[in-house]
Amino acid sequence: MRRFFIDEINKSENYVKLRVNEKIYSKETIFAAGYIFLDKAFIVVDKDKQDVLVYLFPKNDKQDLRKLALEFTAELLNYAHYFNSARINAEAVKAILQRALFSVSPPVVKENKDKELEELIKELEKEERANKR
Image: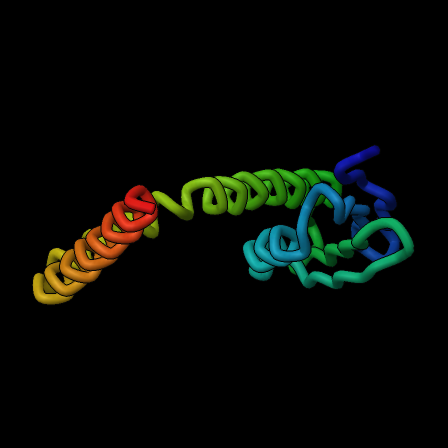
């Protein structure tokens, strides 16, 4: 199973066609990589039965089509890594943001701590009643 490959380099029409495996690279990753290339090329994204097709039409007629395709694949890898890291670190980022926001608003922290204490006391009381039976 290929991740991506250069399907066609058409010098007469001045475009390069890439096939990108959607099982490996999400649509978000493909679109993010494409967005970076808006200043270098016109981009057409299409779909066939198996893959996402990306057509790159360079804005500069002297652009090397193979090099343009390889730069696009490097951006695919870059954004795949970025989105994967963001997904892995989401909980840590959430905890840091919560801590930062709660430090700005101490009454909210106190209120949450009070609620947590009440819940713990209720749980302990339930366990105590269950043990007495």
